[in-house]
Amino acid sequence: MRIGELATATGATVRALRYYEEQGLLHAERTSTGQRVYAEDAVDQVDWIRAMLKNGLPSKAIAKLRRCRSIDEVTAEQMAVIHAEHARVEAEYQAAAKVRARFTSMLDYLKTSPIAGGSLGADGDTDADADAGTGSGATATATATATD
Image (cartoon, rainbow, N blue to C red):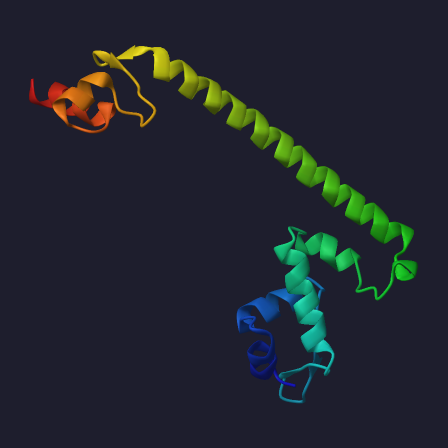
């Protein structure tokens, strides 16, 4: 199967297939003219690679894994890769949760603080904006400052 046929069969782009090959995720034989030829199981392999990428695994981790049909086929090295990726994702999640908490705290504070002659309502507008019908407090303040 040639690269265009594999792309059509899997929905992957030709560029993605070349990338998978560069990363050691997919193997192609070469014809005498240098064209890639993939085995029939390449469709399943590409589907598996795309599923792993969709689940957040980087290509370097995927290269260390191989498709397993049962839990009995999973090696200790593969389990270590999966645990390491889980730890990485968990650390990213915890960092994002801390940033979210800081923004929530900031928004809670801003809702009760006087800004541009009023306090922020639930929609983010100041009381002064609501009275003037101008919308965003930042826009109204910037407009007033620019025209003064």
